[in-house]
Length: 416
Image (cartoon, rainbow, N blue to C red):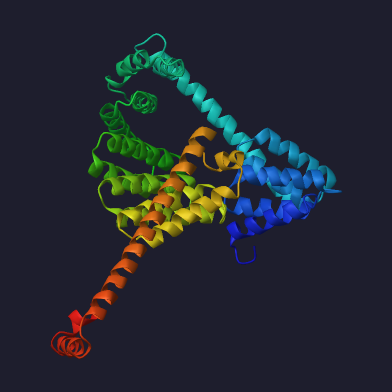
């Protein structure tokens, strides 16, 4: 903690908690480390435990529970936690300051709700449709949830084919985003890429790069377009789009570590490997792994996927011993966790059956490389024995003379 190496701090506090689960200090300190990485859900869980285990709870436990709930947008729950803290520590300045922050956030939320209400009223009064553009988007979203993709696409096409102005532009942004996702749902990759391309154009023209949420939304649009291009077989366009996604996600700063940045790096690596560029793909997977370590510490289950992909890149390059080491690392990480924990830490893996399939494939690929190494070793041994036998068959002095002559005239060949 003192060196601000928060992932390692989380790792060691987790071990301490396993040894002494009733100690509130370890929970509190892990909550603080999680908050430093902006992992607010985990921070809230630990701070809540620290409050429950404290006898009485410390002022810091109350503070970080309220703080984490506030940062998650749970203003009502944050206020409740803060009230408990103020009741126990009425003169605490940090709690008093946090009370002002909660009040400010509550006011901002009410103002946003008011603005949204006014926008809805304005949209309903100015729309050419009796139900309004936003309502059409909501209806299309409901149709998609019911699996009625064609009906949803037809409704969304009505909106996207019209020219939007003013406040209606943001509703059209929602329509293009939903249309792209609808095409992805039925694997119409070319249409999805086109829809996300229109979405990128609108967001580039509308959103502010200084607004973190809008920049993340733009990054997501570029990322989805990259995925659509990749599945459509347009790898160059996919790489370009994913590079733009990464630039928006990090704001041009490679030191930024977020789950979104890690996912984009993995998508980019997949495209590079499909282009037969295993060295470049390996670098992207290694960067994704580095981001993962900064976010989650050293033993997170998601690291195993990156190790598996790095192993495949090394295998593509013919670096078999290095590939084997990466396969082994992946298997070791998975073997230390149960299925439930693995799935929680790898949201991209849909279920236990798919997890088992990935693990088994990893073991199969490792076994194939180990077999390949053993065959190469046996072949080398056999060739060495053959060479020894052939040398023994030659006459001693004559063979020695020839060898010395060869060394004198061509030392490189003799070395080989």
